[in-house]
Length: 120
Image 1 (cartoon, rainbow, N blue to C red):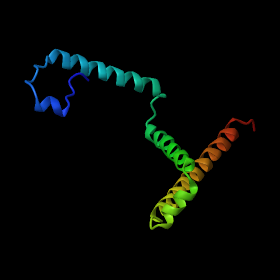
Image 2: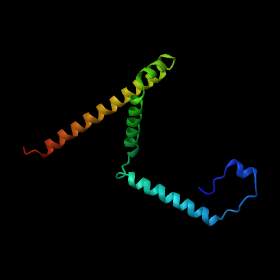
Image 3: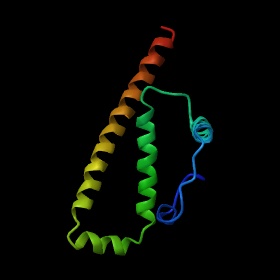
Image 4: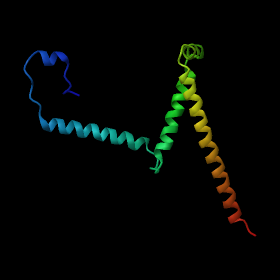
């Protein structure tokens, strides 16, 4: 971060030489920090990890929306931004559809597993 310059640095004074070794070390340190953060947050990597990441982000956004003042939001929607309510309705339908599909699929798999494992 010591290489970030302000506007005043460009306007006044001669430029100080930058040591390339310092830059490489800083970049490596930053990359190591990012990799450590990713490792801490990671669950075992799934092929469809973005499915679960998207669900987490949707949930976070829903929590944010629900924490906002409902009267203020209602006023905004009434004031010509009803498109936002339409987007929420469409998203709800999509999430309902995926939930229903996965729930039925899992229940069918469990029934099949029980039937295969039960003595005849």
